[in-house]
Image 1 (cartoon, one colour):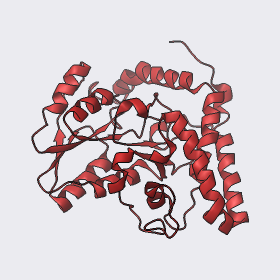
Image 2 (tube, rainbow, N blue to C red):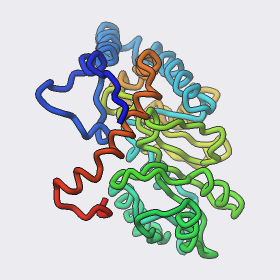
Image 3 (tube, rainbow, N blue to C red):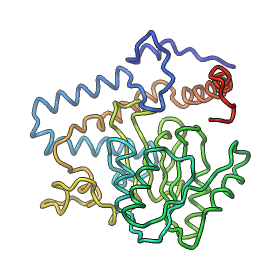
Length: 316
């Protein structure tokens, strides 16, 4: 396998030098330049808290959203920052305009926290959460799509699906799934927690109505930096998870969506402001090449780990 010299790159991270860090997908790892950017924002916050929290911080958030929107190809006003994808999906799940007897179709490969959130919602609302079984190992894109839509019924109103699965690291054909779902009049919700910085993301082409991704994984921002994207035609029913000053604001902005989900009391949102620095770091280090190399490493070593751990090679 072709090797890449990452000695200089590894020295820019804060990871302990005596460990080989393999679990980047869970919480990421923040390079020194991005961590220093976080500290810069935190120092500005502490130097003049009122000015930062009530005025300047929102200008900085707009600049950060604009940078992220250019990277993931959407309008800046259609994304809000959240601490993590679980938080983002809780906003959506608790707001879904569905009634008892309606169904949400998903797979049996979804992230555990999302399973829990949808199960909670199902018990509270009477909406049925359908975990469609997917045959492993996957053979073709067409076979997966056929498997998935076996769970479709006349009661299905929405689909929920990961773009990259957490436990199995499969890249699912969400573009095709979303296109077919839209033809059937279904709401499309995509968990893209592992996508930004890992594989290309173009929300203008994906046709997802709702999408969440983490910036603190493969984009390497500090922990607690993710985003929620909602198409404009759906933003009116997305309620805030926390009711605070943005709800029925005395000084509303041009976007209720931003008011509801950005103005949520006192919280340190400086991690959100590091996205431009993260994108700068990625560009400087040819991150598309780095990500491709990481994928090759996984593919090259996956079966070795199965053998070392005495696992069934298809257990993953």
